[in-house]
Length: 341
Image 1 (tube, helix red, strand yellow):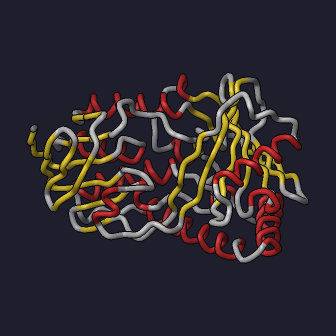
Image 2: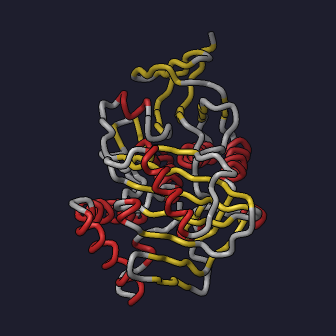
């Protein structure tokens, strides 16, 4: 049985955990990063990085599979094309992004243990399948089913679901399809990669279980001449049940904190930013960041829109069509939606 002590233990090696661990290690703190999977990176994810995310990562150009300065948005009544001089969204291979961030963390001095499951948490200690590790600070970056969140006694009730198929082939346009009849307050997407595309659906509707959502996605895809059968579906829960992030010497980041958008399901920007800010706050408890204030403001806006859209199908259609019209007329900035996935 191995026993070691660290300044900070981070549970979960997704973008949030890696960003936090790297921030701390670069400041000279001993950090242990625990990941239950043997390989860092793979996750059910469309792989879309909003422009704001790119500002947080100095990604090598080779990691960016596609850059889009145009996005197509379709609704029941409208067709809108968003355009900008610079890319609005880029796509990446989620596994390659995780591997790159892990290499960066290791180079900064982070101790990374993969294939290690956190089995229990106490004040000052984490019991794992590989021994007991002691901490001064603990960061929960362990996703929507976070053990750290449960230890803090926080429920998770506001969740959405995303499912997708990674289809081989050439797809040129990045597209969003809003269809309350099919997806309630959610949407279907087409996110092109180099030699494939993520084609999937996100919905925050509690009355749309995964199996029914999958059927509706197939019905929608058939309408647009897309055959999803060559690639198996993959699904994941997405938490937007934010109830705080700082609890004394324990922090929650990314999906564990419920910081994904309930409206769009996008969570990579929130993961990276919250991970960095948690690290900086551990180093300096007085640290504040306007970007995080703006993130929480947008999170609340998305929740309000989602609440209005969730009342019934008429309200949902009205809200979504109004949003699309506002985007088309330039009355609503697309960055307020943070389109990505």
